[in-house]
Image 1 (cartoon, rainbow, N blue to C red):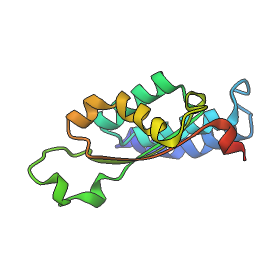
Image 2 (image 1 turned 135 degrees about the vertical axis):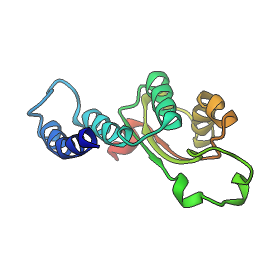
Image 3 (image 1 turned 30 degrees about the vertical axis):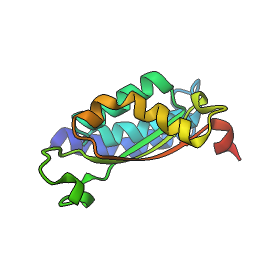
Length: 138
């Protein structure tokens, strides 16, 4: 608990330093802010969250990734009856060059294909917003 509190106090200062390029100026600020978001969420994330982030980061090399565990708002959901999964619903925003030239359906299929193990293990829903860096710049 004490470490988590210290991390929560530290992260806003780190985010500000990264955004202002006073720390690690060699990396683009969007990448750095995405890393900060992940660090703050990972402090509370469970094994499914961690697995999703690791797989997507490794395979898609995103410039930005945001994963939110929305499971608590779906407790008692009809589709979850009889399942033990605690981490079942997520919202994902991901920006990657790997989506270049792919229509939306294929981007989603790419993400789903990387997460078959998580879906087999109880992941029930994933709300995906998948963009390219060019699309985000518009």
